[in-house]
Image (cartoon, rainbow, N blue to C red):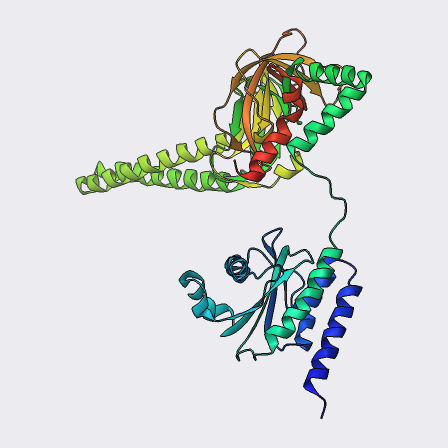
Length: 457
């Protein structure tokens, strides 16, 4: 039978060898939580790093998820074990400590049974100079033997030496005092650098006009929207897209077959009822008993005449004509041919080219402080080298959700040159100018906003 002491000694040597051969801190942490089992059996293991205050390794997992409830609870437990290790410190050594849920606070003990076995041992990992680097926690269902803490204490020294060896060397001191000393030494020794630094500072406070870019489109003021007058099917669009139409011109033809048949049937029924009414009137001259039948037939003829007039009116509404002159704006005509529509559904828009305006959609992330009268420069996608100038008239107070799902503020501007207005429907990019600010604020506005969102302040 093998000597248990010899077996433990060989396990320690093997674990020390694996720790020395670890290429980086991640590989060493893997050895801590997964390979220590060859010396002391356990069911779960976790390593907590003091420097970051985070759980860095879990047995059987490649990377702990900090959002997991188990990891969050373990980090609270490790913080408490760190306090206990500091209290038990003896010189430069941190002895391992066996514990159960009775040894921790009531808040931690409340969830112990859900996350860990009944028995655990806390193994502080310290460096050669006595600086605590982290805590290795081992847990299992059975109590730890009396000699196992001593074995783990020996192994903890090797782990601590390996962790210290893998720390980055010559790490610069990142503090305000260090940066101040460094800047003073550079400025003191080099006159040219002082001039450059002064010029940069002067440039950073130079006032510039803050601006923002946003997509824009030329639209018409008070456009007339062509809507479907009834439920039906579009037979044809009778004008090309973006064409000029005069008042009274036919724009859309709705499917007429059903309404024409209904009108023909109603007209035929009305003619039959009128013939029956005339027959009853002739017979009433000789027989007064037919007077009551005449009243019924007269009411029926009146009802059928009303139905015929309504059917004729509905048939006339299938021919949609322009109520205003302007430019017909809509999509592909083939998309409308044979398309079913509901009453009031938008088909096209008639826009007056003499009443052009600039509609701008300013994204929430690009929003700046704007007032009516602000300068706007519109760069057409079709002619970006010749910008069109406009003046801001309106800016919405709350953003709206656009068709593409983005959240943006609606802005409206009027063109300064009334004699050469861009065509309705053209799109491009608008540059909106705001107040004057320092160049440093102009350059750092977006990074500061992104940092505030990331930090939640």
